[in-house]
Image 1 (tube, rainbow, N blue to C red):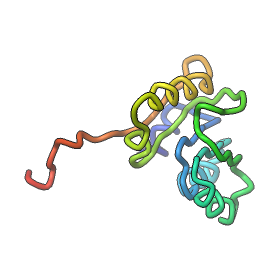
Image 2 (image 1 turned 45 degrees about the vertical axis):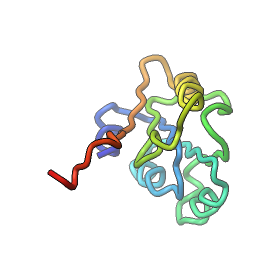
Image 3 (image 1 turned 135 degrees about the vertical axis):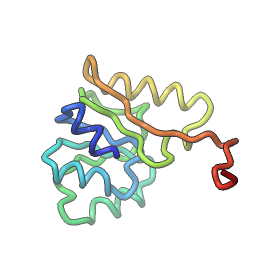
Image 4 (image 1 turned 180 degrees about the vertical axis):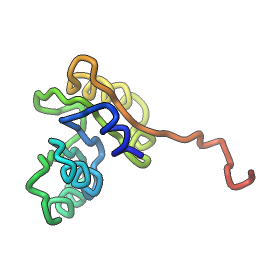
Length: 121
């Protein structure tokens, strides 16, 4: 899903917020996209950086509130990343992502309604 959206938007530069072990970032790099993977969990980044092709991705240990200057076409939050950012950190994260996006850039993420009980349907 996310690769399709990134390609549909014509993105050349992507910030993967909460990149985890780097699976998505490396997939984008396979498509020739310039990727920055960002995660606050150093152990997950260690796993990402040990994967084949990892040097094609710029890895940053931290969160969106302390990004270096960049201008990306798309920022992504795959899986449950958006739901893991709670309270005031959500607004701060959105501000950091906004600052990292080029004018007209896009934030792509999914979320779920924790009150919905899909297994009952």
